[in-house]
Image (cartoon, rainbow, N blue to C red; front, side):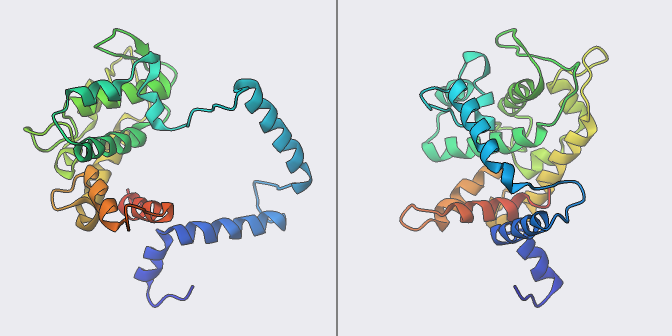
Length: 245
């Protein structure tokens, strides 16, 4: 690819084309045994495939494999929290999708190792959760409480105004952090969400004038042709919107 300026080069790096090109470059280096920390042995790939297939069939004999994503954590403990929340919403499918985007993005960015001692007691059930499941439930409750919203009359949203005010104190309160329940990286998580707010405020073409994460739903819908949108276009929008967080 030829570029005319550093700005264009930087924009290109936040594209699916760049991701694929860099992946092929790394693969070529691996084939030449030029990676300092990894070694690729293609002769052992068939054995890896057999191992993965055996483990998969042992865990899922019918191959009815549930998808893996942050979304499944919101149903930990056998409770579909997203379904329960939607049942309380007086909103159409588009607004539910916007809330879903608000929830997924903020929850994913809060999901890093919380440490071995942290636990979250879900107020509505009294059940304790830890690690990714605990962070998922805690972030779900944070969104439901309007913590990420800058519009008090519309609490179920995550926007730049609300995220700009998010600090370690709010995170500690929402995640029940204290001397006996410490969380690793508290300030770093809060800073990351503030950076998220700053990033979406700088991209009104993706997130609207009110800089809400969920507005990406409308952007993607506008870009679809006959209600079809290539996966690469979705990833390009994600990289452009969140790549600098």
